[in-house]
Length: 229
Ligand code: HEM
Figure 1 (cartoon, rainbow, N blue to C red):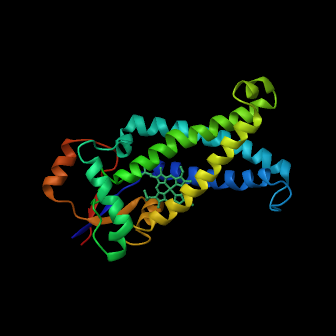
Figure 2 (tube, helix red, strand yellow):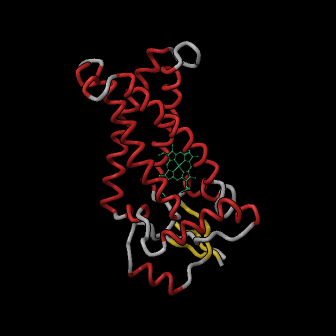
Figure 3 (tube, helix red, strand yellow):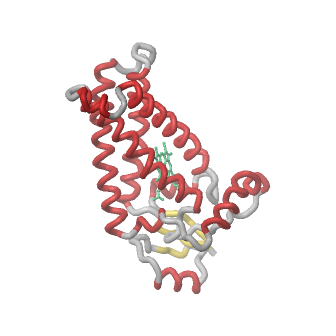
């Protein structure tokens, strides 16, 4: 028995795809700026302008996203459950390294209220709260340093800030490649992608006691369930 469950609200999907498109464009324009003249897709000055505007748009998107996730309580999706974090995290790691190749079942059954496994929670927390701010701050420092060079020398100089920013960009590229691969490891290779596009995913029908537990515990806006088979 399965049911079609709303996993991502329209705003969560908008936030995700705006962020994904923004970061991909930032990587592309950043590469044009980093290797001037060698990537012929955009003129250098246009790449700089697009890169700067996208950086500010991403900053706004990050703050709006944070506000939404805190205000709706959906931020709980990202917060690891202390009681089973280590055991479930280890089981998930073993699944990615071995179980997945033997067709073993997923260690954690996905529900609308618990859609992320512990490894996803930790990865997304680090990406959104460490890597993203690091990129935005180093980017802002280099941007404002053109007008106020004193700011840059105060934090170690342009070569250091630029190196950290470039390292962050490589980390984002690495994350995105691994992220896209891992999105194919859901119930079917495309089920996670379809969920992030349509909002809905077909999942095993939750047991009544689990549904009860959910309705009395955390409440997030994700609550539309349709039984299909
Ligand atoms: C073209 C590039 C991308 C594709 C195709 C993609 C696709 C997806 C898909 C299918 C999911 C749902 C399944 C899952 O949680 O693993 C997801 C979740 C997520 N992605 Fe991406 N993604 C892309 C880029 C990015 C980038 C650049 C970021 C950077 C911050 C990002 C951050 C996230 C986050 C935080 C979630 C969890 C959302 C939540 O459950 O609230 N994604 N992505």
